[in-house]
Image (cartoon, rainbow, N blue to C red; front, side, top):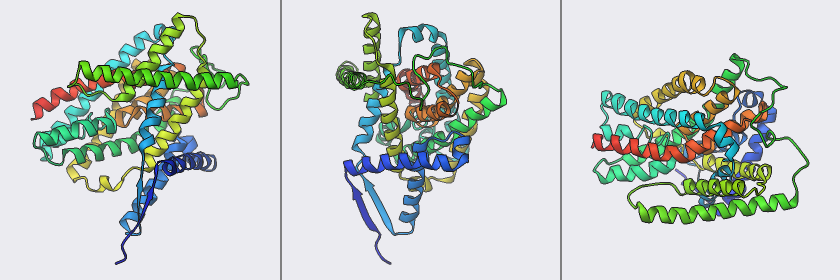
Length: 402
């Protein structure tokens, strides 16, 4: 049998492929009505098509791809920092109650994900700790938490925990990308939540894809500089946080977002104009590149290695999150258009990661209209505060399981 050809791509080439696949996915969406109708992001379409082809070629023993995804983390950090600048004082006051409600919902979902994984996993004959690797660690937590808590479980003697956590996180990333848009779209259609004449009363930026003519070279330059400075502040905060609380695991992108939040609050207090449109625009670029890179470099063959009991638990997790967002998130967040967009976001980070949330919500924005409230609430909770609540919930369950 002929040995498979091994193709390796460096950091720049991987970035090049990510951008091409994003553009290809956007083009496919214009040709295939299904993806547009159900609001599947272009970055997901292009990335997932490549990941499936890579899986087939690997299983056939033809080609194996290796990518240097170093820039994936960098673009994610930039995206979260840009998102932090959306935390205006006006929106903080207006969305204060909803932020708290959504924080409770995010924590409750994480708790239920762990309770489901441990209880159902035990019934199917799995070790409780191994079963826990299919709960909020890889789902609400994403690959970052999987890579942090998986090895920790293995250090406790639970061999295979890391592989299960990483594979489950990959599953969640795919499921969240595919599920978020269609579920939110169905709610918008069912309850007739969209009127073409509606405008977002919270919006100070325009819907994705529209032209305003307000962009200037100075505004774009200022936006880039602010995001880079915010990212630098986040890096310093990350170092300080690790020095003060060395035993607490917190992803660096959370601190990048906090850097953006602190800069926005300071600029608002000093009456300094924030180039929101420009920051949102470049933030969307960072997001698209990250999501495309994260998906097309996925090792889908890791999902094949999952045992049937683990696959069963992960499938039931999909049912759980659908029921949760349909009967809790949607009505408690207002049962309106903003709530429907928030549902897409909750599915995104409840199964995968906040960038998936943003990609899901961007797809809805392109089809309907922008929701400033959703684009504020979801990343603030999913990208910032839920990291703390999820870590506490995970620690409680891990102590019980061991």
